Length: 434
Ligand code: ADP
Image 1 (cartoon, rainbow, N blue to C red):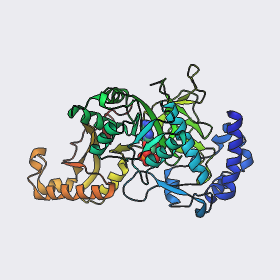
Image 2 (image 1 turned 180 degrees about the vertical axis):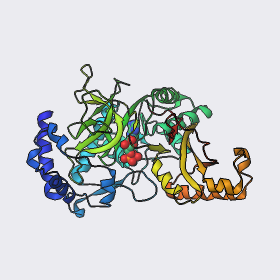
Image 3 (image 1 turned 45 degrees about the vertical axis):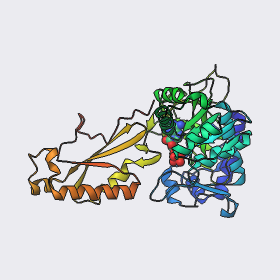
Image 4 (image 1 turned 135 degrees about the vertical axis):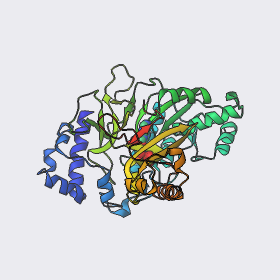
């Protein structure tokens, strides 16, 4: 494996140096030549690539081939603003299908089985990614896409697929609906589910497994690297980590602050290098997902394993499948003279629906102007200025993030500070991280 990775890496650094001005400048700025990177252990010499680099080169600046040689583009799941764009050559689509086919096989799928694909088709990598991988494995694909619960339930009963792919929260929603309608699990034929695109826990796994009568495994990936199928849990080794297909994606775990590479098993930020992609290869891409990697000597496969995602190093939240950075809320706040940047996002889950509340303190000048100092929060809504402010803020939030959030205006000091006087920006009550 190391020999193969090193060969592929040497090939890759020459390739991007010759073809991608961004990488050539990065190498030059660090006094590096491709010949300095001979082995995976040399990768630490290079700086990280991050999401901002993709944004700065929007839409096609990081392509290593002429646009005409790109056979498909995908984007990351933000619903507003400029998305991050990725391009695949025909060969990259082959690799994508290959790693997804492997993932499906690890998740229990076999040629001939039927897969109901409840991942969204479109710019999002999930739908088409799973689709091509399933075809490659020789499965029958039902490309139903996300949502439309009524239709999903009908197809599950009529077509009797053995496999379901969707997000864990949607699988929970389906399980709840099946229970509510008293649909017997015998009328279905489900055996396996591959769930991913957002974090989930063992208790969600239990809920889905019982509610749908199947075995559920975790599939992980991100569009910048390829999409789903970067790593996948084996159905015979649940809860012990996911196999990361390291012949295509070389992983490192680095310290979130110093960027230093950490030893096997330690928790840190996952950094990935695409060893084989040709359309838009990335060197040392900082995923900001916090996890660890390790070799399991009792596992049935030999690839490196990755633990569950423990959180994000950049405060990104996944709300109903949409990526939300708290900084997006901050940007909207800055449009309002009478709102301060003392705010907190409280995320909860009602049933399988994520809810976001924004608590924000109004400016002191407004507090003084309205004489709010001694007024309780319940009474605040009696002031038309405040309800108007609340409504416009909600509207701007929706326009800028694509998400509906509930806003609670507060007076100075009302949002609890931690001991050091710091405000905890995100309170995630969903406990989605294992
Ligand atoms: P998508 O388009 O699938 O949302 P993005 O590239 O926008 O893909 O988002 C990828 C991010 O989604 C990952 O970096 C990670 O934070 C999260 N993610 C994907 N799969 C999983 C998973 N199985 N467990 C936890 N988080 C996941």
